[in-house]
Image (tube, rainbow, N blue to C red; front, side, top):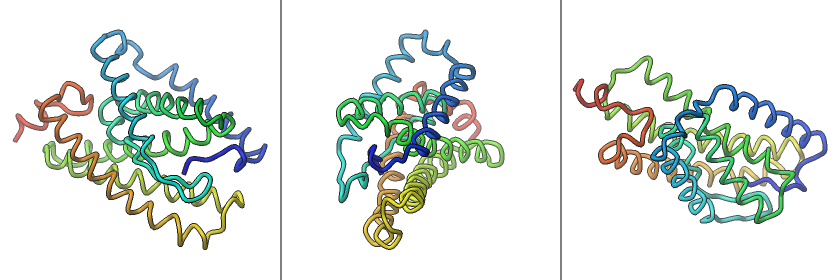
Length: 220
């Protein structure tokens, strides 16, 4: 769902802007900004952001605010860790917002389609990293494939809950025409993320901050 300004009441809009402001403060304090001093790291981050922007432009929609497209949030989270993944998604959504003019909906879209899937992806990675063996198959299947699918499904559920709670669309309409397709998109997101991350850990593991050859390959 790409929310439009008309779907946001003054109260919801104010709440989303305040949440985004708080998130920006946390990012400023906790993100490892020194990493971007490396031209290589900066180029990879910017390149991934541009590639993701192109991916988001490939979309389908049925009604205002009800759009379908791949997210790429899990891949960004595994490549750059959560803060820079949110930064990249923030840039993507800012670019799209500059085109469509829905500036008042920017924080809602970033929180729902950026922060939420990144948080889900990072939580799954942390749980797998702490409790399961260091095995490349576990990393790819659970963190990349399963994590991406669950992240996409969480966005579908959250956007449906918001649309119903805010009175934008009825639950019956969304249950028939929107939510089932989001679960299909979850499968596409999982497959695409799993394929991309498999290629990266094989050929460019230095681009994936959460993958370490010594842990996942040398230990086998």
